[in-house]
Length: 288
Image (cartoon, rainbow, N blue to C red; front, side, top):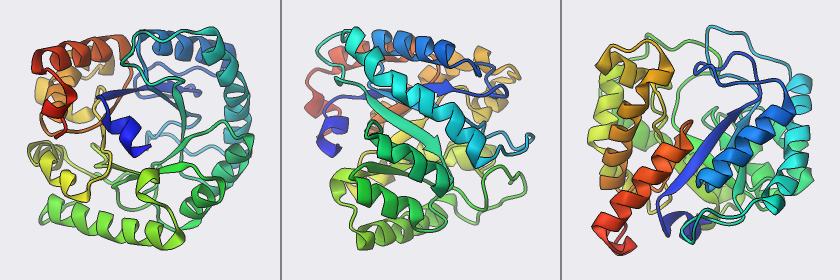
C-alpha cells in the first residue's frame, strides 16, 4: 500500500450514501451511488471512499444497522463496477481501492468480511483499538485521522496552544498503539483532519506546516475538498462553489509531498495532478 500510494499523487473520490451530506451530493439510492463511483473511476479516481453517515455535527448519528445496510449493497456492487470500467491512463491505480469511511467498530466488523475493502478511513481518531485490531485481523490498511472527542459532536470551542504539537503527540500515540497490535508500515495512512475539531487558524497552520508529516515516512491523505476553511477564507457559504479553493489546497499539498487527496470533483483534481506532474517531471521531483 505504501509504495502504491506514493508512486504518484493519488485521488480519492467521495461517495456519500446519505441524505444530509454537507456538500449536497449524497444519495440513499445505491444504484445512483454506484453510478457516481463509476464516473469517478473513469475520471481517474485511484480510491473510492464510501460513507453512509454524514460527519456533520448538526445532524444526529444513524444506527449501526442502518449504516451497514447502506454500505453492503454498494460494496457488493463495487467489484462489478471496476470489472466493467477501464483505467483512464497508466498513472491510475488499478483496480481502484475501496475505502470505507466510518468510526464504528461494529460497522468495520460487518464490512471487512466481504473481502472487498482495502482501507478503513477511521474518522473517529482511533479512540480505542478495536478498528486497528480488525484491520490487522483482515490484513487491510487503516487511515488514522487527527481529531479530538467523539464524532458527530460539535467541537467549535476546541483550542490548541500549538496545533502541530497536539497533532504530533496524537500521531505518536496512535501509531505506537497500531504497531503494537501488529499493523505494518504498509498498512498505515495519516490524515491531519482538516476542519475536524479545528478552527480557521488551526487549519491554515496545518497547511503551512504540512512538510512536518513527512517525518513519519507514511502516506499522507489530505482532505481538501470544499472545506469550511476554504469557505471562511473566500466568504463562500455554498460548498460546491469552493472547488477553485480546493485546487489551491491541492497545489499546497503537492508541494508538501502529500500522497492522497480526498475530493468531490475528481475530474478537476485528477486533471490538475496530471498537469502539475508533467510540469515537474518524474515522480522523484514530487516525492524524493
